[in-house]
Length: 178
Image (tube, rainbow, N blue to C red):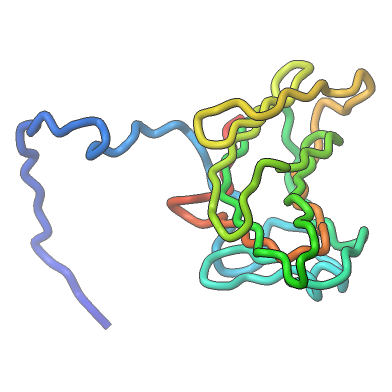
């Protein structure tokens, strides 16, 4: 056990630190993943077999893709921004990499520009009739929402068969802003 007492703060004047050393302003993102377990996500036997939590990261285990193992959020979202880091594992035996895939409001988004072995930050914005995908600060895809798309729907992480790690923990969180 630990105790603290007499904790005080004195704000200091700005040091005019450069932007790269200054924390970004709060953007209103809220975490979707606890970093501990799959609370907040719909689960079944296939999901438990394929998905796991490792070191505060959500991981898809290597193996045969299972269409019943798409990991869906319990909450539905309308117009929203989702931010997450994804790291596909390097394929073995010279096989081509299957890109990590997410599903927003019924639209399947393949992260075809993901680089195996490296984390990449993605931002997916669903607004009005479009899904805009950014890798880092660069727009990489713009997809139309189908005319019959529901106004709200869950966020899904598709089981692609290839092992993928999604850093979905604070501070690199799978987050959303509505």
